[in-house]
Image 1: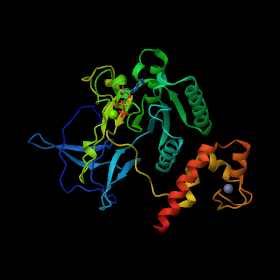
Image 2 (image 1 turned 60 degrees about the vertical axis):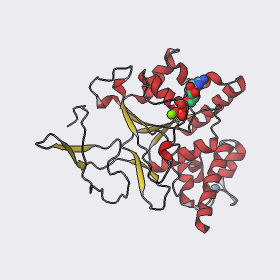
Image 3 (image 1 turned 30 degrees about the vertical axis):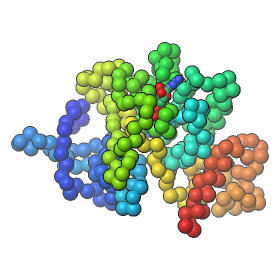
Image 4 (image 1 turned 180 degrees about the horizontal axis):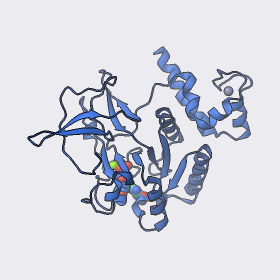
Length: 307
Ligand SMILES: Nc1nc2c(ncn2[C@@H]2O[C@H](COP(=O)(O)OP(=O)(O)O)[C@@H](O)[C@H]2O)c(=O)[nH]1
Ligand SMILES: [Mg+2]
Ligand SMILES: [Zn+2]
């Protein structure tokens, strides 16, 4: 039943899902079946199969993973051209990871109020680049989100009806954006609290907010169809995936599209003759920054093989 009510639930200690060794059997975004016992307690008895999920591998050696979120429609990566600088390598690696998870990614450039003329030109170039590859982008100032009406509307349109996971480096304005969207203090801004990230037993947890509780109406019953935002406080990225060398180019849409024209079907686009990707870079139809990111991910693969 999807009645939008908040219910506190218990879960049996030995609840495990087939095939996933995760530290959390139930994740944010899961659809579950709940049974209410005679004593009034609620128990999760079934977890529906996940459409997708994003994991973070534990840093310890147990090889267990932590499910950050399940059943998400899109990831919004918050980035900043400056204050702090978000590198294109970071953006591209993140986008490649989203491609591997088969989750749509959108790029939200924040803090545009702080940018110089030159940085604004850089922003325009970056937006044009990622739009041309097929990613939606938006430029905002989370601090002044409601000052100029149209960015607020644009961001509402991006989020409406979707389950969106917010991500991005610390300091880019995720908490500020959440607070501005909901019109009240959702998470602390400023000083980064990483107390959760210390020690072996990471207790980092994600939180999910119903979009129809926007504008301070916290006690409105939840309407799940209006969409959700998932915040993962204290988590900088997803943790990288172990890509196979051959598949890295599949996660760079622009590179992949051209690679069909390469002379060799197993072309790594590094030094092979007849490489269409190299040609496209010379012609300028593939950005050098994208190619550099591709090489950086490719380099990781080679390294791990001989480690
Ligand atoms: N000038 C300006 N500052 C911002 C903007 N968004 C966030 N900040 C500031 O950047 C700092 C980090 O923001 P925060 O929301 O805590 O980042 P988080 O680590 O991603 O959650 C805070 O001092 C915010 O006030 C913006 O659009 N413009
Ligand atoms: Mg924060
Ligand atoms: Zn090639």
